[in-house]
Length: 81
Image 1 (cartoon, rainbow, N blue to C red):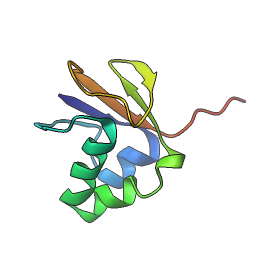
Image 2 (image 1 turned 45 degrees about the vertical axis):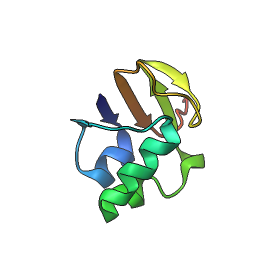
Image 3 (image 1 turned 30 degrees about the vertical axis):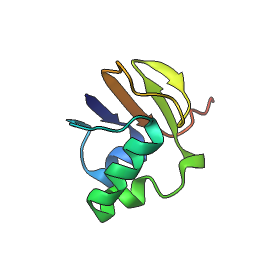
Image 4 (image 1 turned 45 degrees about the horizontal axis):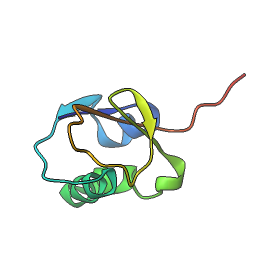
C-alpha cells in the first residue's frame, strides 16, 4: 500500500510517501510496524493524539481496519485561518 506523510510528519520521517508491504490489520498495527523501523518513524508517531489518518482519502480512526485499503495518509490536524 502507499503510505503518505504530510507537514511535520514528512519532515521527521524524511519522505513524502513510500510503498509499504505489511501484514498489519489496523492502522495502529501499521503505526507499530513503522515505529519499530527507525528512530525517525518512532519520533513521528510518538504522540498519536497529534495526528490524523485518512484511508483512501477518507478521514478515519487509528483502530480502523486496513483490509482492502490502498492508501494511508498521516497528517497533523488542520487549522483554519
